[in-house]
Image 1 (spheres, helix red, strand yellow):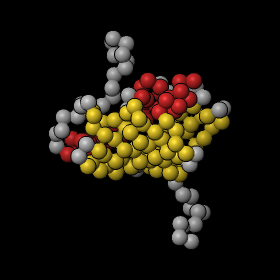
Image 2 (image 1 turned 90 degrees about the vertical axis):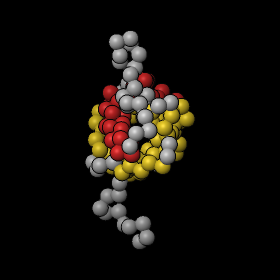
Image 3 (image 1 turned 180 degrees about the vertical axis):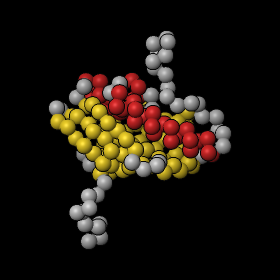
Image 4 (image 1 turned 60 degrees about the vertical axis):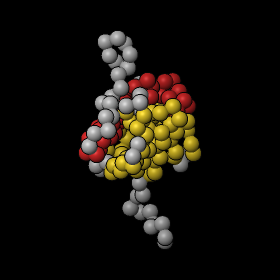
Length: 150
């Protein structure tokens, strides 16, 4: 939090600089957002999300307010989150996709969950910065899993 008690946004403003600047900015956002999630601070996590943000997982679609409510209540916490691969960043005007393999440890409803996932986040450039509008997570296949065409 800043000295005024307000939450500071973890990303520098987007100034439509060189594409390399946007790549670096988005890569930094991935790391900062992971740190925010591990902080279990709903307001800090929300700083990275657009109002219409949703997450898509094997259990379906969870809207922003529901996700943040789980965090705020303490029902959902994260104790670890780490990028395993460098982020694959693609920028298309004011929209960007960021795909990265993440490992994390979460606790939900008193149970521990260790996950190894591919995450794809869709960001839009808005109000001078990048905000995530959609996150999609896919569990990493284990070596024993057959190929999809088998």
